[in-house]
Length: 227
Image (cartoon, rainbow, N blue to C red; front, side, top):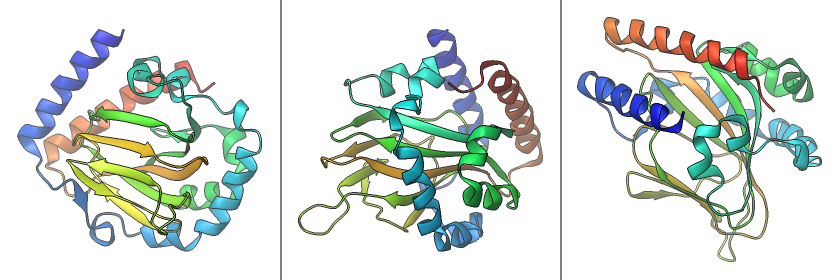
């Protein structure tokens, strides 16, 4: 299954790379205007994330949700846990109910395909990898990000070789088909909100291709569920 996933990802990336170009980091105001709404509610979203984190052992590790991601999730014995509210259009009612404020904003915002809260254990390193699907963009909002002694965020997101340190209430919109990795340099858990949002202004054929891919992935999500 892992080999099939890897080969399919390479093929899908090749199709998108041949038709859609863009920088690793994009202007959220142009490509995802609701970014400001989520940023404005970051404290309420953080409070809900902290209630989830109070029982963090019940939140599945990423490779427990998606076995194909074992190489980046189970690589170093440190946890990367994902609390999934929505995945490619499929909502998980219990998780949505656990975060009602976040769920309400997600439900009211068109174009959001997936919504998760990501928890990285102290010292966790997610190694360099690429996403397969340029039809969506990744919105990243800091919720509870530890800080270094100098005051800078201790969690690092490196995209296409450039380092980004996104603190509490700060955000980034980026294309996860570029090589990227993440490191929690602190001794505390880092939590962020991750949204996958529909990419605007795609060519008609690529928009159709994207919808077909999303429908196929959604079928798999319904079959697998989340742990």
